[in-house]
Length: 257
Image 1 (cartoon, rainbow, N blue to C red):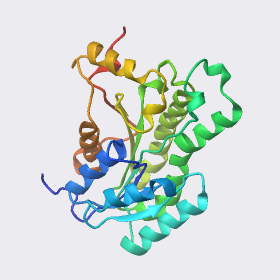
Image 2: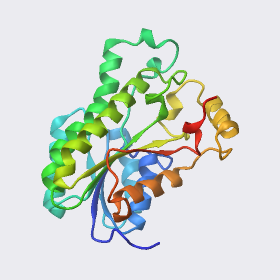
Image 3: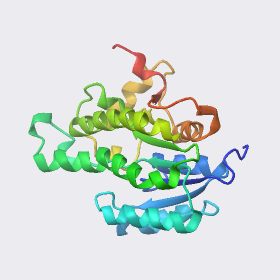
Image 4: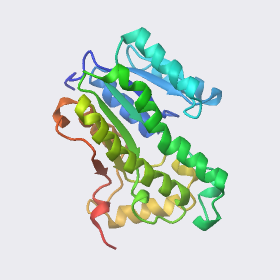
């Protein structure tokens, strides 16, 4: 692979294990030469994230619970001390309580609603604000991960669909704010893939089967395909793209039924 991102630096939030979309993004960027700061959300994930990050040349590993502003501040301070600047942020963080991902949406608790939005949507805005001093003047790129459940009703996606809708609106507003500063903001809307987070959605296996038989490409997408699009959005070939939701879903989003 051409090392098109040699000398560039990036922050990856959301790696949990080898099946994570965040990990696929990390691998694609590292293979292109980018040095990465990889975060873990809690002590339970630290060991696996450190083991994975050991495969990424020049990477650093940092704790970051996105609900803790002091954690985000510490991440940015570490990156500034280590590299002096930041070229890309990959926001692949999402969470909702398992009990909120089944049954009727109107049963969503206020606590569950607010938690899903804080982790899955607001965190992008806070991270962007705190990363901004490190990214200005570098033709930088911010990429987040979303899902079509933010646009259409997906059975059992419930409160996470509402959070993804907020996330996608945030992408557009952030893109408008940061464009004059030379920073692009985009989202990848990936088709369903077996990950740690997707395992919490009731009936997920049936969703995969439906996509495989109804999407134009008649298959599901892979982690690697999402990683490749992340690489595109962080590189110079996408320099004219911002505020966009880019679908990597085997074409499923175009189908009416």
